[in-house]
Length: 326
Image (tube, rainbow, N blue to C red):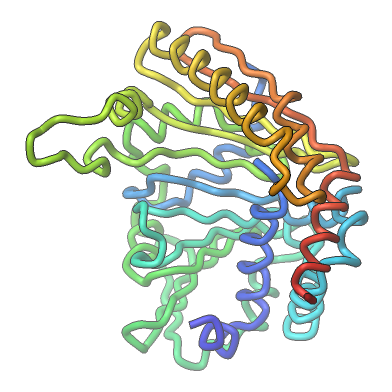
């Protein structure tokens, strides 16, 4: 599948892969940026989670400068994008992934791109191989509809936005010509999301995603999970990584229970691994970070925050690189 995408739209595929890898590399009531509207305006109505990466911001951060020499795959993706589009990845402001289910392998990805001030969406889309696509105008915007049933289509909205995904979803968004009608749980999570950060996400599966047992009984933990309305988090990449995770519950009492549970879990993990001789030496710094995680609750929200130093990230990346060579 990856090879097929690469052959069709090599530059686009490179950025998509780098976006996902950025989310992996970045470990995971303020005034939020208005960019939240930019992220959510063009997601499908059935969207249940959103992951957004400020790609240009990440590629200019101190963290990227510290680890880029040890991650050849990311450097190759940057080079591939430039070779196929004649533009640099730093010119892409944001790439967002919107999903509708909890099994990504069984659903088609839907991507939303926002290009930076030095680039126009039409100039970037012109670099893609679209011989098997039909150009259609819908509400003043452009749909490049695939002529092949299983291939992706593309939408261009204004000068800064590109949609990439299943034809029917792009067409519905262009016809809708406005904000999506999102489910309540996602709306709840989005209130906590800060999409001005390098990496941000929001969402939560519907209650029905937790299968009922035949005797209709649920374990205590499963019952507890059903009290969660939404989850949102962010990672700000500068010289270090500032990580924040918010979990929103139905009520304040359950939120306080969630704080106690999280605090207890961190203590158990710390005592489990601190003297474990089987823990690799390179993972010791990451284990020590367990003591730095701060858990708090306010109203119906539980928040976890931690700062991950650049040297810890660099060391972990280097050790992972060395392990891959063994």
